[in-house]
Amino acid sequence: MLIRKWILLVAIAGLALSARAQDWKLPADNGTLVTAEINAILSGNEYPETTAYTRKTEYIDFTAYGQKFTQVVVSLHPNQPRLYKGRKLVVVGAEPGSEYAMDFLETVEGKEGMGVWLAKRGVTFIALTRVGRWNFFDSSGDGSWKDIPLDQRMPIYNRERKSYWSPNDYVTQKSTTTAAATGGDSSVYRIPEPGTALYNETLAATPVTILTGYQKAIEHVLPPRERSQSFLLYWGMSTGGAFLFPLAKQVKPDGYLGWGTSSTGLAYLYRRAKQGDFRGPYTQSALRIRERGMDDFEYYTKNVTASLREKWWQVALKQPRFKSVEDPPMQFHAAALAEVAVRLWFSDFLPAEYRTAGLGKFIQDILEPSFPPAELKSVAVLEMNGTRDEAIPPRTADAHREVMEPYAGRYRITRVQDFHHYLFTQDSIKTVGTLWLKFIESGYFDL
Image (cartoon, rainbow, N blue to C red; front, side, top):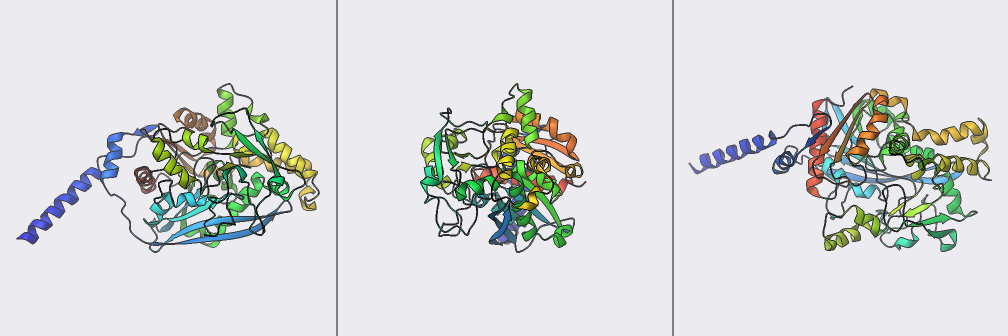
């Protein structure tokens, strides 16, 4: 009798859980997932953990423009992969502006990140770190910057380097900005000194170099011979989107997941010009490394208490906390990109093969990653943001759509009520992860 009652209670609980799961549905294009629907997702467990996973951290050495680089890739491999129409689900994540691959594994709360959440549900996750963002001197092997003072952090472009940079390798400058800004500025810059290895490597870390590293990382974890057996989706968190969109030319995905994702340089140029700001192309950002300190972190955490912000900041100090060579292509700083090209052209280390097609082609190649590639025309793009996104609010996402939608095979915007830019909490990760899996199952990416 007691067993029958227990079975009945379990069945009732299961029906209640199922009913709660049905209390929400995917929003229509330009629609918003409201608070009641978010609560339905959080109270349910539509996508429970299904598997353990293994983690790999691998280093890929390559040369570009006569300089050595090391691409770091962290990948999570489920023991029991989740399949979509017989193909293994694979998500590639490109890191935000001042972070690195490990932030996909651990949030500033010190809890599991989106990469881990997906891996535990059978999704293979490939976390990319832009060249220069990994601290090869970290004894733990996790690339953490915790032990390097914030005001001394500069990119480390390859793992062969024997010692950290000297203060003689760069100069520090104060900008006129006194607080964090979302428009590509910071209060502190560090500029490599000409004639140093830091200068040469920073100059050679062009948009093409970043994309080369990304391509090598993806093809290392997911070899081209296995591509047809995988359903490949890209997620560029924040500034990561500016490189995953042009990457479609080298490694075309089956679709683009979105959360707080930046767009191409062209979209940024369009949006700012539409708002009456025509200064962007002239920004002097060719060689600058800008510090993303507490003022920047506070900008994205105004919704939490000061004590919690400080606790999160201590975890965030594992991150690089600087932005470097991604600004010119992402923000379409056309003058800076042209400066990089001609400085390289006149350098004494540029290999002869880069000169064979002439200066015009050389400059054109460096500018190209700021534009959406033709390959996007057969790919579905899902743009998702919180209604309180500090960096890419709804009006910004709408403006980016105006210029990007004609290049995409399918384009859709979904908003989540009261969510912010970063997925700092477990509730935000569960909500967005659930939306992603539901969108995949709905066939949205099937072109």
